[in-house]
Image (tube, rainbow, N blue to C red; front, side, top):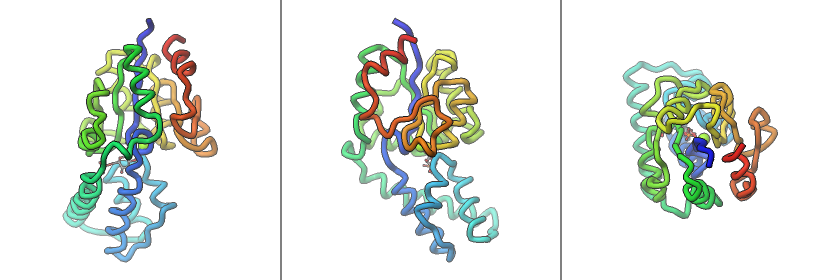
Length: 218
Ligand code: B16
Ligand code: MG
């Protein structure tokens, strides 16, 4: 049996935490008299916490001190953590456990590759921690997606060469990162947005065992 490396992004692929990021960022933006819409939230998907706050401040034409910046990031994360502390298995996106179980049954190594510094806590909350051989998250990287660093570290930890890795991603920057790591990119979301991925599916319910077998064996 061939050994491939399967790397999963977290937010938008395994669970939909974007709605909680939205609530927390909106509260923060509004406290600074900055409007914050769902469309703007879309642009923060896959983007690190620091970069997200920089973007929000730029949209509102605000400049703040470094101390205030750190303080606001802390406040946003506190709010976000209060939302995710309520999460449970019901928030896992459709057929994610089915795909993970199939890969495990076929002895394929699995890693997380997320920008979130809260990834471990979220996996624990939704009881998926033990399905992952490795976890690479926002605490392990110095360069944010679209830099391929997060996925290259995951490949190294899985002991699989990058060209034998498959990445599931919902964000434009994440697909770009997988492509520059020379991995097989699978976009989870809309074709219009993720057209640069090698394959695109709306969600995991569209991914068949035959397709997974092809990925494993070719
Ligand atoms: P945190 P992913 C990303 O997760 C989110 O898509 C993005 O909106 C968020 O700003 C980023 O994590 C950092 O998250 O504030 O929890 O460290 O899609 O890479 O799994
Ligand atoms: Mg994502």
